[in-house]
Length: 77
Image (cartoon, rainbow, N blue to C red; front, side, top):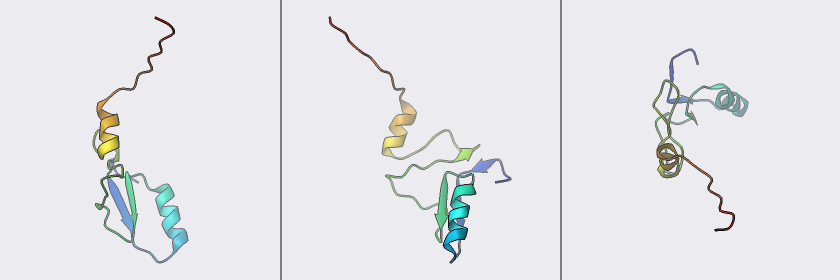
């Protein structure tokens, strides 16, 4: 947490409480327990916190990053 970037982080532990505390407190886009911090599935958001990147990757998240939502309401024409 004491760095400028936060793309991914991992911890290797057998203690579930340590793993949960790590996942809650780490300032990174991915928190992996007993796995490489660079693993991802396409349906998961992939991107960092702080100075890591400019948004999230992954089909749904990439579309959200490249578009702006707008509400348009018609009331009679």
